[in-house]
Length: 276
Ligand SMILES: NC(=O)c1ccc[n+]([C@@H]2O[C@H](COP(=O)([O-])OP(=O)(O)OC[C@H]3O[C@@H](n4cnc5c(N)ncnc54)[C@H](OP(=O)(O)O)[C@@H]3O)[C@@H](O)[C@H]2O)c1
Image (cartoon, rainbow, N blue to C red; front, side, top):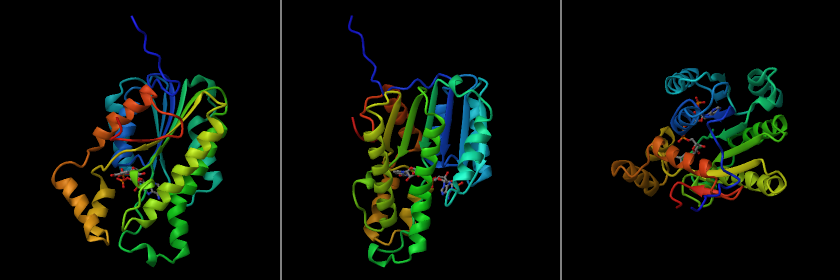
């Protein structure tokens, strides 16, 4: 009988886990949070972050309905546009880890899902306002890096760690009307690729994944469909929705779980929903 050797990147979500999900109040982040948390063992700590308290409450309710074991869910209502290092450290990590012994967690996992589409009503040549760029990069790149740095600082032991960046095909490929989004996703993904290159070879307990979820029906894709300056882009997204070829959050979440549980990727890789 042949035995199947699990990849070193495979994670076991059924263990006692410290789990952070940003952008957890709706869309892909909500569904991924619910489905990941559904597997987690008693004593796991689940941290959900976004600006909308009601959306976070709903995600929490669905987690608790699906996971009958004794997990603790923290809701953190925080605007990630310009969080200070102090806010990240105290509101996200001190508040949820409290005085726990970090060694009690068998897995520490963070999913950087937060994302905004930026202004889609203008072409690239018309973006000249530096404050607008700063704000866009602050949410989509800088706060992600700051939070990730703090996560790795806290879990710097031999605890098994998984860092996921929710990326996009548009980190690799330009799209008319989506100037801010494409450039922000590219920068964010390159940060995680560089981090993986530097850390993962010498730290076998750390895995880093860039996951592109495919086109998914959420508020983000609705905004593109209704507001993109380029008519052809609006039509593509409208067509995907009308022909029901746009994915539902649960479809991409199922694929995501398969990827992280099999660990069938190189750390730092870009894995797309449509990859085999
Ligand atoms: N949908 C797609 O087709 C698609 C394709 C490829 C990649 N993605 C990526 O998948 C991720 C999730 O996208 P989605 O489609 O689910 O989008 P969405 O429905 O618009 O959800 C975005 C999430 O990010 C949070 N968020 C936005 N701005 C924030 C801020 N300033 N501070 C804190 N939280 C903030 C939102 O919560 P609040 O508004 O409550 O703060 C919400 O929970 C994004 O990174 C996106 O780029 C999506």
